[in-house]
Image (tube, rainbow, N blue to C red; front, top):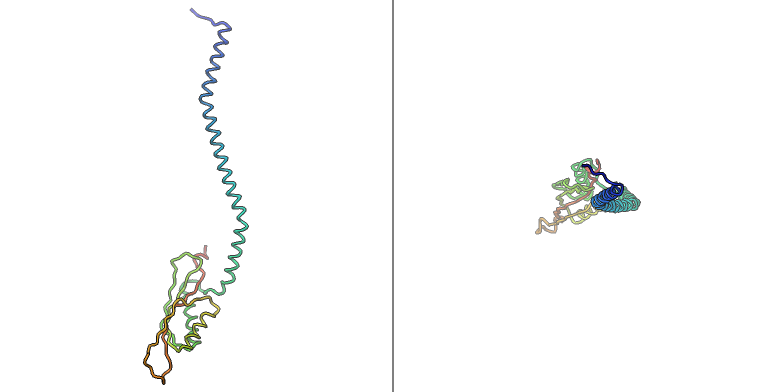
Length: 195
């Protein structure tokens, strides 16, 4: 026996199937739509924050350029007063030569000279040091120190130790002082310049 549906039953069946499909779509689709909306909102917030950071970078670009220009001007102003040399050893030799010339100009006797360079740091400048022993009178030592500190090259006397080797020397002998000094200067770091 085959049952046939009347037109009213078919409408009720169609409405029932439509309601069931609507419920399934609503049960599955609404949460997915909410997740998609939430993700889109979060993405929009992230993009807004990124745009604000980018705008901040653009706003800071002028200040950064100005700061770079000031630093470049300072470097250009002091660069002629830094030690010359393609290597730290070459700059150390130049500093030792400055100390030797100052000692010769002050009529003091220059003893040992030791060059020390600090190449382990990756700063913009390398420190170059010279440790030297000199012997002379008080006028010669002060003349040498004045020549070093007033010279064209920027340098600093980091340590100075003065002793009188012959305390019991007679009045008929000239005064003799022995000094140990450490002189330091800077050179541009060749590793940073080549970048």
